[in-house]
Length: 267
Image 1 (cartoon, rainbow, N blue to C red):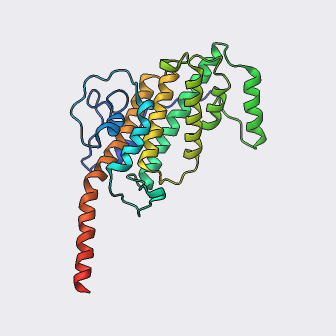
Image 2 (image 1 turned 60 degrees about the horizontal axis):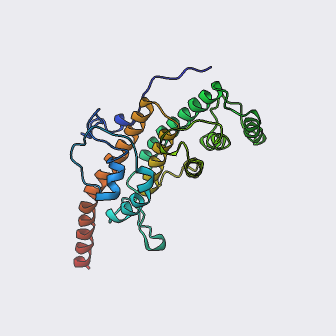
Image 3 (image 1 turned 120 degrees about the horizontal axis):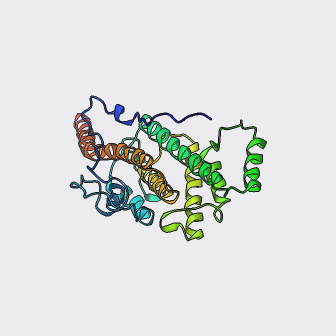
């Protein structure tokens, strides 16, 4: 069995020398009740005051539709060319390099956490052999290689958990509600498919929803404090860049207007 590497994140290194803030224990609550992702949906992207001690991470999944809606209304501009599908402008604050870093970390922690969770359920005798065989048969039929433990891709891991809703143990508010468990797993399956197609040009609202869904999943399967801290760092990385773009976009737009005005005068 391959041992786990020590906890490490490359995200703070991205801002090295750029005078960007680093996440500190007990500073701001980024996810969960009164967290930044939730406040983004309630009151915009302005820097919030110091948060109180983080409490239970509740309410994210319920407020995510509002988060996605408001994030598209708050930013009137974006760094890439404007796209207005159905009359709504999609906002992209993270460039391709920044998205590659975010998704690398997010997918790593999701797959590692699910691997540990499924392994724990196996040790407790809750893994159904026929369900597992169904997953592995489909895996090998696609010509995919053998894996260590349950280190399949994210979508396959989610499929395996979904086959054991009645057998596996779950935590949090969804633990006694198979419908909500199934709904969250379906959302994660959709996210896994989107993350697999690495275009690195996802809108802010999509990334925000994927982060909130990931936190809801971690709550539901009882992820460790280390994993939740890692996710908080990913959200912090996202937050810093979104707020940076929120501040510089009006300046960029004023510069574009000035250039356009000068060109008109010259004409």
